[in-house]
Amino acid sequence: MRLILLGPPGAGKGTQSARLVNRHGIPQLSTGDMLRAAVKAGTPVGLRAKAIMDAGNLVSDDVVIGIVADRIDEADCRKGFILDGFPRTIAQAEALEQMLAGKGTKLDVVIELKVDQTKLIDRIIKRAEETKARGEAVRKDDDPDVFKTRLDAYNRDTAAISPFYSERGKLIQIDGMRSIDEVSADIEKTLSHLDEEVESR
Ligand code: AMP
Image (tube, rainbow, N blue to C red):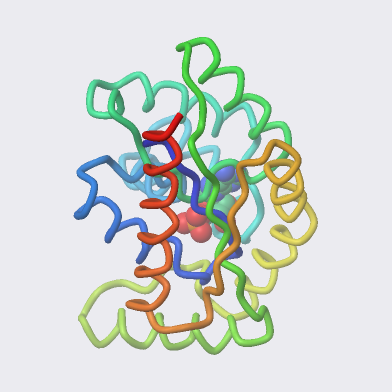
């Protein structure tokens, strides 16, 4: 199963991806995590990306597309993957389509977590407090001002992804404002319907 979790920062994509990994045994490909690992390791990509990420802006399409292209070539992605935080621009979505077509495959579904953006700042403050309470470092871009820049980037560049996949008949929207368990149950229901459709073809 090849799926994308779509939604603004703080919508719960990471949390829901982790559950999907456990249930379906396919890897989560988070471009944010991959970029943070590159920053930590001080690779050339990481050095280029750090200031952009700290400011809450988008890293260039060519860098991110390159990272994803390499990652989906790895053996653990053969049975599928969950894309979290990619694509974030139409150029990335088109590049993904080409990448998959080149492998003779395509996406199964795009699940969009619909959230009330006015409530996201509260969620992100809570996420920062919980991270701190666990004794872990809080992400620099979870600072409320930087978070607003990330939301602006989402609305400017990434919101257009939703109609892109809707036109291709791939988009399913889910109410992401409910509890983690409720959202997760809804995602599983969607995926089981998808399996039934595939089986009945
Ligand atoms: P995330 O963990 O998905 O919120 O991503 C954290 C940051 O990494 C973003 O604010 C961007 O600076 C960068 N980033 C992650 N994924 C992408 C992407 N697909 N395109 C551009 N920048 C990205």
